[in-house]
Length: 174
Image 1 (cartoon, helix red, strand yellow):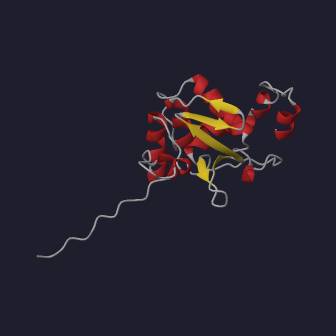
Image 2 (tube, helix red, strand yellow):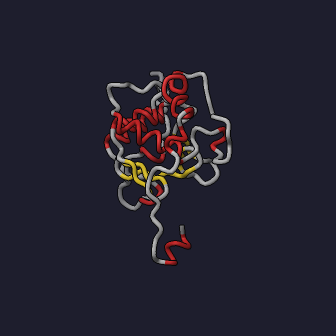
Image 3 (cartoon, one colour):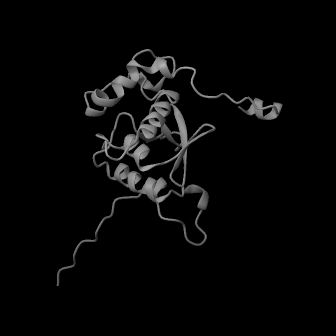
């Protein structure tokens, strides 16, 4: 009888690996929620995902980024610096999808996505904060959503609250 070849499964990304069992190193894996897992699975499979304005893994420090800022994922939420964004299906849809479904995201999701893109310089060429050129593309997402954000980005300048810690050690760490 002829032996069948072994099935090769694609490797899982660190962010969507199943929870560790036993003595495995728990710190090497992020625990993500159901919503984040669904969208990160699309990301891992590279199916209908935005490859210009998306989450990426820096090969040098092995950290996940949006724009020029490292991110953490806790449950479904995204943490960028000291700011946490509620990981709703709509926000994840906007971050991951090449052509986000308007029936999935809300105005609040869109506003959070806008803040996230502007705070991380994800719309700027090379994700560089000092850059004046946009990181544009010919894709639907740029033409239909992101170009308007870029053109109106000054409306968002200065919005938000800056919290300065009263503890000098915390201030120095920031």
